[in-house]
Amino acid sequence: MMKAVEVLGTKANPEVTLNPAVPQPSPKNGEILIKVHAAGLTGDEITWWELWEHPIRIPGHDISGEVAELGPDYKGDLKVGDEVYSMIHGWRGLGQAEYAIVESDEVARKPKSLTHAQASALPIPLLTAWESIFERANLQKGQKLLVTGASGAVGAIVVQMASRLAGVEVVALASAQHHDSLKALGASQVVDYNTPNWEDTVSDVDVVIDTVGNPVLAKTWKTVKSNGHIITVGQPPAAWEYGKGRPEELDDFPNVKWLFFVVTPKTETLEKVARLIDEGTIKPIAVEVFPLDQVVQAHKHASIRNRKGKVVIEFVPEKN
Ligand SMILES: NC(=O)c1ccc[n+]([C@@H]2O[C@H](COP(=O)([O-])OP(=O)(O)OC[C@H]3O[C@@H](n4cnc5c(N)ncnc54)[C@H](OP(=O)(O)O)[C@@H]3O)[C@@H](O)[C@H]2O)c1
Image (spheres, rainbow, N blue to C red):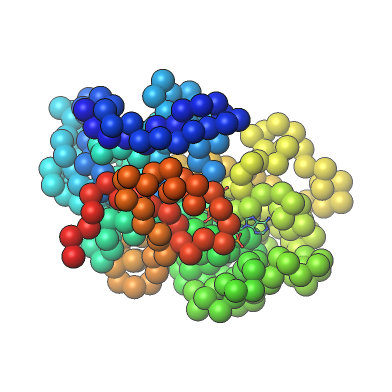
């Protein structure tokens, strides 16, 4: 048996608890069992519908730890004891536990220069940033990008990857307290969302990467070129997301492309970015670490704004 975070109650009234005795999973087929050292929390993850499909509702997609056991058909090059980080696919989760199952295409060796707590904060943010910039927007050198929620976990990685890897001019939307740090991460222009009509101060944008959702998302239509591209991952999704309809803004901006997507885990991207972090090109995001006996406080803190970093639950305290 193992300890795991469990969400009881209802979707409208969820109750985070620590369950002291959940059956420990064992790896089947090509699966990998990870002894979880730390798990990163996304603020709104206990509202994601996938969690509510599980018989035991253990949240958690972002983990860092060590390989504990390999499934009988595993064919990759990981060995028991290797230190890895992983994004467990959206529909599975179950990461906030002492042991978690990952698939071989969801995991890579963790950045050597980071603690498990720092590494566990990164998989969803870095995979979302990479997929948005290189696979969805296909941003090209010299283009102009507007990033909303730029001081957040996803936003801060988007700013760095877009400016340092893609050679893009980055406009970062965030409250004023984050402007200096966003310039240091590579933003060429910083805009405060508290300024009335901020959208009138940004123009000729080729691509928007939105991590906030409405009402911020709705304002970005004014900032893009007539054939620009708006990509959003913000939650809750706008009414037109998940293919449910057509944005009404198209009446005024008929040639703007628009997309909502859900990030897909990818070993290759996790490996590439681990190298970029170890060589210093991409800086990790700040974390606020909570011990296992404070999972309730950790989830509460993850859901508030203006935190000092991404919330992480530590299952195995880091040795100094
Ligand atoms: N679809 C996907 O695959 C996918 C992948 C990753 C993340 N997401 C979603 O993307 C969102 C961001 O994730 P994250 O981990 O980056 O969260 P985060 O670290 O909490 O960052 C959220 C950012 O949004 C800003 N923000 C929040 N409300 C705002 C508002 N009303 N106006 C302006 N800025 C606002 C925050 O600024 P302040 O600090 O000033 O409040 C913060 O910078 C979450 O909803 C998450 O679920 C979706």
